[in-house]
Image (cartoon, rainbow, N blue to C red; front, side, top):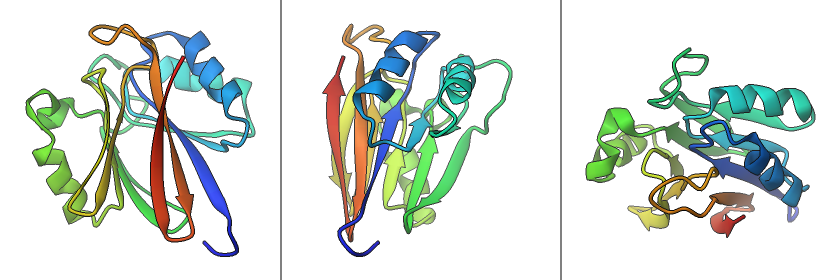
Length: 164
């Protein structure tokens, strides 16, 4: 991207039917034109996609998503960046990030997104931005609804965490 442009992406996970929190996060960030949902909220993604047609929603299937509307993982190319996303349950996320971080390396991802643990995480490993937005529903163990906005700007990828 050139000319000082920046793309803002809302990253959420584990909404578990809490469409009101998901809607609130979208409303708090009018600059966002894309939402990436890291699983456990397929019906929420469908509902908000219909309510906000100007916002593009992409999602992956979580362990609580039973209808398999979305794939288990995705490799997206957004604003020239490669973004690998998964819920994480198929990668043993609760035991560490190494297995899906390795998949991100194989895919030459700039960003790896995951959910499942309900705990927000933003860190860099081996040049890859690793992001878990936590649970937008505020479910156990955190009890606070959390999400992340990823900014893709001229050669720089950053992320900032938020609470509702």
